[in-house]
Image (tube, rainbow, N blue to C red):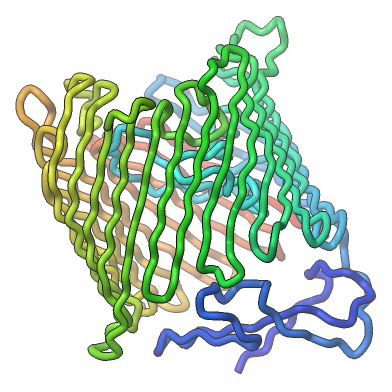
Length: 549
């Protein structure tokens, strides 16, 4: 039995109504059983507002509470870049965030001189790929209602990626309008202005998206992303391109019973030196039942397609992907389901000549406690379009045009996530370009309720290549400690050793929530050479924010 008290002023709703659509759900951790007050078909997630019951109030409700809130902050910071021979650099800053409720489903967010120093640092990864790694957005300003922007495009082909904004140049100010216009229309509009920093130009970033619901569960979204060079004519800093824009349409398909899902889109990039081949087109379709899933997709990204505010791993390529999976439900041995999976992925040039191929034959077993085991047999082929050092350690690069094929075996196991101690382990061995690779990865976490948790992530990759190319043993270790001293005082310590980039990173964050949505942060960050513990750069931040509502 649980009882919650939720103030009406904290909820946005339309005044004068006497009925709400509402649902309650429960997860029985012992049996992994989900249940809900209003029935939800099994093929849908529990948090689905398409299936609600009716909550009838005794009388019509009054209008909701405060229509705006303000969160100003004050910040003191001291940094030092010892690699550049700089002395201690003290700094003071102030800024303001504001949220204005235009309607029960439409918000306007404003930010002046925003600061993200308290945001959790990224968990590092060993990069053995030819392409840029993707890291998720963690800054709160970009997260609310972000699906209308972040959901554009497809995996590895995003026309808008908010981490392109404000990580190198400080953001001077930003505004975001987001929410529902009515039962059929949603919108999201965001604009941010960055400042000049060192040799980096100032730019204005804007994105606008309008989404229309179609049929029962499908929708179509039209959008425009714009990056505009904004340095004044007298500035010495020059930009290679005055603007970069991407416009497009995305259609998301979802059948009434959720068995058919898919996505189709057309994107066109626009810039002042653009080529004729500057479009991206994609389509994929999946059919899913309780025992069977099949999917097929194809994409084309033009050689001249440029999304400077997006995340696009490669251009001038065609990508075809298909998969088939089947599940058996034995009803014994504490096994929930098991079955085979086949994935085939092909990359080709415009003339359909093959550049990459990956075929995976897997078998997965999932137990009733949600732990699982998976074995993969993989075949890979690569024809290098550009020179590449497989260890990413600044060694001799394999020339472009070289072709390689290899086989690998991989094993994965994930424990029961409901336990106080949870862990994930994986191993991989096989060919890798013109050599071999052994990869071992593990993550473990132990919860000491209610006081905190201790976690450890570790990765070891041994890459053996023939002379004269570099071989390497790449190690990444990241212990993390989270302590809850009280309901209002928290400490996070995250240390990451990464010999691929020759760095030991330490991030310590103390948070005191002295009032609702009001915090005092102390954040210390240090990057060090691990051999002799000589500091590269370091900094400490004291930040105070207060919520006026």
